[in-house]
Image (cartoon, rainbow, N blue to C red; front, top):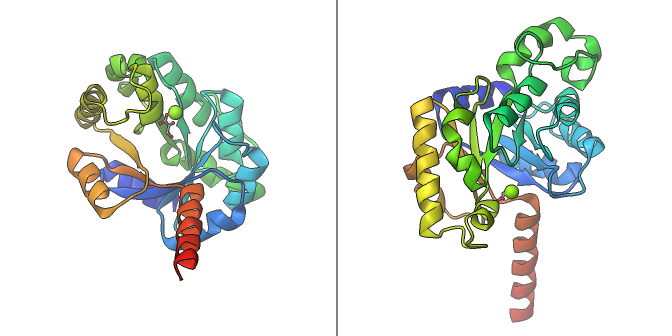
Length: 254
Ligand code: 3PY
Ligand code: MG
């Protein structure tokens, strides 16, 4: 699963994942079984903590779905703990400077590339595959920087120049706030900013990611045509919410 993610990122093939906002291993297992190549657990905006991340990692273990965690910030220990319980990588919110990007990468990589600490954990089968994991993790672990402010857009060249940053994921809602057009995620200013980010990623050989909410085939095609390859469709809560409402609407009609 980590390999599928790494291969897709390296080859810039579109890779489709989804988002997790509950700490339910059952929901995560359902999404993994549906075939998403990656799932990103949101630990920035939800109550999901490190135990939730570990339970979800167990729930989807052995499936062809890589687990990513959108951590709360570029924090060395939080990133370390997420990787140690078995995440294949991290999505780091609010990256605005190369220094923040370097902090995130350093947290995710063992020396000499970074400052990640060694331990026996889920990620190395409680020590059974310690050597193998220690020698391959720096290559396999993924670090995606979220660009969701004007400062992040302004500094995109230096952020993408940081070795170990695999690509970016756009945060359209925070971006709309930062650009003074709250909620208007498709405002022309923002579309221009998104296009410049995708272009910068292409030039740096890194992936650009986007979240598609209330997904349709049309929206997906559009994202791919615009150059996004790291694509997130909806979220556990969105899918449940939609299905539940549709079920009740159907019931009321009959
Ligand atoms: C944003 O739009 O700000 C996000 O963080 C989306 O996940
Ligand atoms: Mg955000």
